[in-house]
Length: 234
Image (cartoon, rainbow, N blue to C red):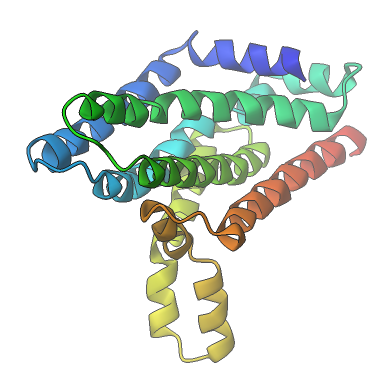
């Protein structure tokens, strides 16, 4: 698994993809930090993390579009499937590489908090809660988009599918308001990423919300392994 993780991590920086992702995350986090903290003269970074929610939704599909589909397109997936390594290790290695890149990208928010602490005392528990929430959100979306990437050999199609899922995540709260069926309303509210993420922006680490994101991540990692198993025996 570690070899797969290293291989995939290096691959992000052997093409412009990793640098583009870093640049986009650094730009948005820096812009929001300047606008709402430095210019707004406040140590409350909750607004910054709140605004990073849609940014992450639409950047993660770009980060993950090549994870599984590139191997299919180049034919190296067959080499991986016949190698003396389990499909679970392959998937976890790829997932870990994308999650590592994401973690490094959002670490810019912690650097900003440290810079701010030189001039005023920030509320570190709230900042840590925000950071954990953003990390859970990103890693959950990575698991979902990795599964979508495993369904196609086209990176473009994988990215479009990821954008569709991100759009659904953004609109699911609105859907809960427009449907009349109580079961569907409860279902859409239960699937709301925004509601669960909002508690993190307040510095509140609620176990049900943590379990929600971890469970979805586990589910889609499992489904990705199932796709590889089907290809192995199909």
